[in-house]
Amino acid sequence: MASSISHRKTRDEYKKEKELDEARKAGNAPAELDEEGKEINPHIPEYILKAPWYLDTSKPTLKHQRGAIKKEMDKGWYLRGATTGEAATKYRKGACENCGAMTHKTKDCCERPRKLGARYTNDDIKPDEVIQKLELDYDSKRDPYNGYDPSSYKEVMDIYEKADTERKKKKLQELIKQHGGNNKKTEDDEKLSKELMDNEEKEGSYDSETIAPIQKLDQKSRTTIRNLRIREDTAKYLYNLDVNSAFYEPKSRSMRENPLPNANPNDIKFAGDNFARTSGETKEFRDLQRFAWEAQEKGQDVDISSAPSQAALLHADFLRKKEQLKQQTRNQLLSKYGGEEHLLKEEIDKVPQSEIYTEYSSSGKLIKGEEKVVKSKYEEDVYLNNHKSIWGSYWENGQWGFSCCRQLIKNAYCTGEKGKLLREKQLQQQKEKQENQQDETTTTTTTNTTSLLEQHLNKSNEEDGGDNDKYNKKDEKRKEKKERKEKEEKFKKALKEQDELNKKSVEKDERKIKYNSLSTDDYNVSEEQMEAYNLKRKRSDDPMANFKDDSDD
Image (cartoon, rainbow, N blue to C red; front, side):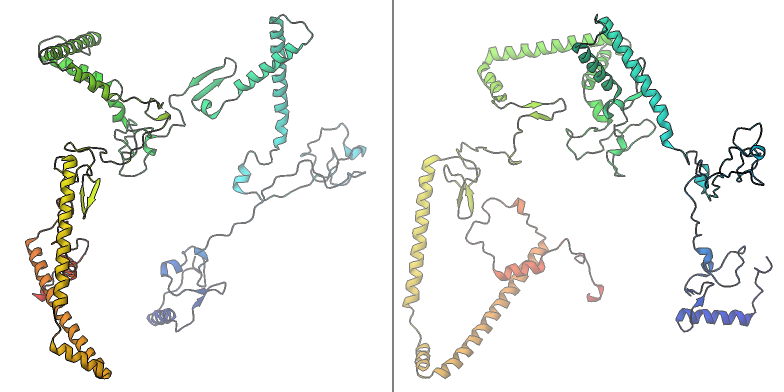
């Protein structure tokens, strides 16, 4: 203890040690070496570097931080009955007086005690045993099966197999006597014996499906005791491992909500305890309870808990009378106003008939046949306002319509073939107008005579090619400048218009745009307007959209 406690350091020694430590950390001084000559990292904290007080360490070391090296222990066992070699012919001094072996004394001899030992007779001297010194592990010392030979259990297996074959033979003999057979074996007896053997094998073997619910099996009486819960069933809390899923109460083992709400209920094995409460005969029981409460309010003596059968009979009688009253009122209305034929037609239409055979299970899954393929989530083949074709079956100049009458308004009524003819006439008139306008523009362009200046320039171009090129370049530059100015003016105008729209905070939703709103010829967006919109439009996904700098104000 005294050697482990180091003497107190003076102020100068402590100061020098601190300076050396800082120099080592900076890399100016060489690192400290441990007992094994390995370098110690100077950045290691002091509480890790310091060894405990009970370890006597004169030099700095990190051995206390390293794991202890385990010795390689023997995993075998003692050799049974192994000898070193042949036995001696004469008794040797210091050997066992009983058997004559040198490896043990007379006290420890395991041989049968002789009347006259090998010391006196020199007969049947046993060879020396092999003495082993095994360094066994903690677990191997306490292992009860260490050194066990599994082949020794074969003797026990043979005994049970012999008993089983004898039992089968006795059973065969009893059956042959019952059938009135003789001692001689016939072909029928052999067949019988084979069948019995097969049946016994089937009874003896249990699959994973059959053995799962069995808790105890009695071989003599062939009776089984079934467990309350099948072990193969998955627990409720294992259907969805998400922390925010349905709450599971371990005390009552109940999960009221559905653990997989987004999944298809037909494919789920468990859909919550509330699903079981609302399925089956629970609805009928709820109706019966409501009927009993309403009857008690009106003064009738109806109670489910005290007389449930009476309440059930009264409820059934009430439902029958209610049905009769409904039928009576229906018959009265039909006799007064008529129209029974229309009701029958509706009932016939409601039940569609087809030759395709489909079979469903109790849970609603399809067993045989093919399911109906739903093409889209929207209603198909719906004819509006006496139209013979659907909306969108006709297309004209960026507008949808009906192909039966070529109407371009969705709420318009069908006009038939007359509407088609009128539409064709309108289209012809529009085409003629467009052609006339084009002819007028071509005539105006041809009639416009060239100016004197242009004629003079053309002549000079013909005469002097070099001067003409220079002039053309200047002219092109002027035109480019003009175009730029025009574009800038248009862009400024578009920016002002966009600012005004943003101030009004008018946000046009594409879903609320009316039909044919973009079909008019006047609605054309220029490049400047599009650029102004892209610059000024509000971006909700921009993190700096609502940022305002106070320094700019």
